[in-house]
Image 1 (cartoon, rainbow, N blue to C red):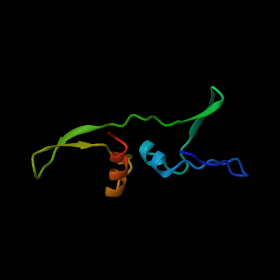
Image 2: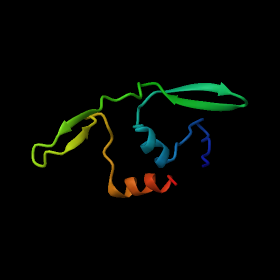
Image 3: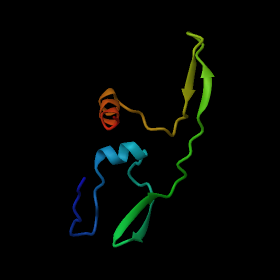
Length: 85
């Protein structure tokens, strides 16, 4: 993947990266110099409270990730799954 540095020193992260990390506009990133490069790390905790609940209609177990999890479209799920072998 490639991106460019703007004249204002801004870098745009590709949409697939933002979706995969659950990043949204305004999220803080930690910037570190690493081996002649730059490492950007989200500053918010990556752990999410995931709970297993029983669906009231089907009686089947389902995962609940809370409201902070980004919603994914079918197209986004296909794109993410395409990256796996």
